[in-house]
Length: 286
Image (cartoon, rainbow, N blue to C red; front, side, top):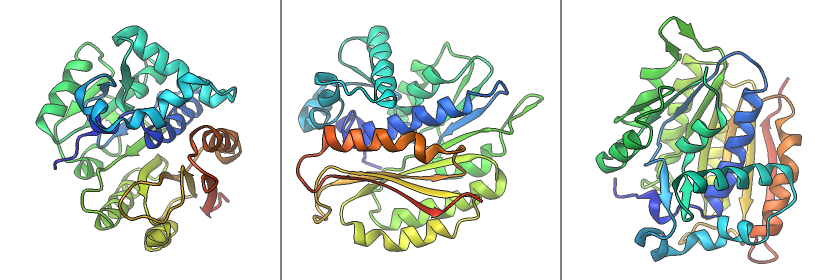
């Protein structure tokens, strides 16, 4: 793979993904029982927005930087910005947290986290970032294969009945990647049917995603919810106009909980009148 997330850290897609990730973590930790999180395409875990890669694209200017300049009052967005501030307090004023850092920040001492990354440089950076955190296990391996290898989760005598799988593949294979992701989700659900699964995906031409939506709705999950943010019209196949998360087995009333945050993100990050937020059930909970 040639994809490097450092070029895109802190952009509008990261903001959406990380706001919802923290909301899922908070829902899981609302109960005292330990939980498990698997990040299948973890990256390096920590990024510098003043580094050459981030400066080259400038994508964070339309994402986290815009929220920091005019912080919204919506509680889930405040929660996200507080996590970014905590990351910067620990790692410097230009630091931006990847999903592994946010998982470690949001989860508790009794919880466990597994992070998978195939690229050698990224995996080594990830190992260094969590070398002193006994909760976090870093695996240099294919993220899709990890679903079979690491689920159902256990740590010693502890078996985890609750938890989260975050899948954030690079989509280098374009639309073909959606088929790989759906197959991996089906495998994960078969091995851990009670887990919460979250798949991030880019949106260029939304109409091209119809086969993916149909496949997602047919997965053997108790519920399937789409949460999407478009910052502009979805009419160009040459750029990412928005992104979404497919959320399976979501916590109770999660849609109502995150709806105000999605609307606030649309207002804050939208680039024109075509910006929109979307929450849609492919399979409502029973």
